[in-house]
Length: 154
Image (tube, rainbow, N blue to C red; front, top):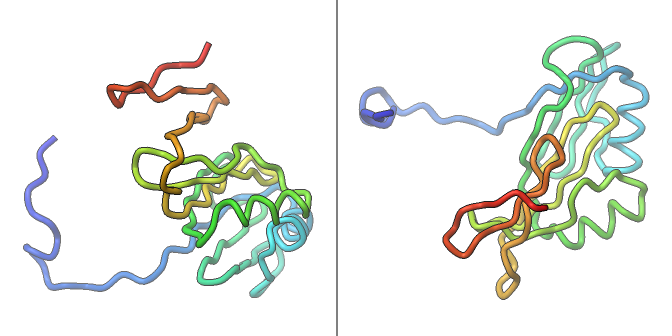
């Protein structure tokens, strides 16, 4: 694949705002309870089977039975993945993977919601901590190798 020029080199500069993913949910009421009580979001608005939750500058829309599919992965930047891990565990969130340093400079905590969506909650990597294993979408664990590659865990 070859990349020609960046958009700002060929078109007028247009600024993008923050992204607000829309996640399909099976039960809007159950999802709102989970996002508010377990994950610490607040309900920003609701219109029937469509709602928006917010925590800090991050917003997620939840839509019952429409727009998207289960199992979407969303990355949200946070200031401290370890402190958030402790908070979310205390509130009953489903922790998929504890805070782990990765080679791309992020320390990520992964949680799942009732519809199988994965929230990758990432902060800056913690200095002095080793690079940790990766848990892929199927639940298979991968171990980092000294040469920078990954090998499936036995």
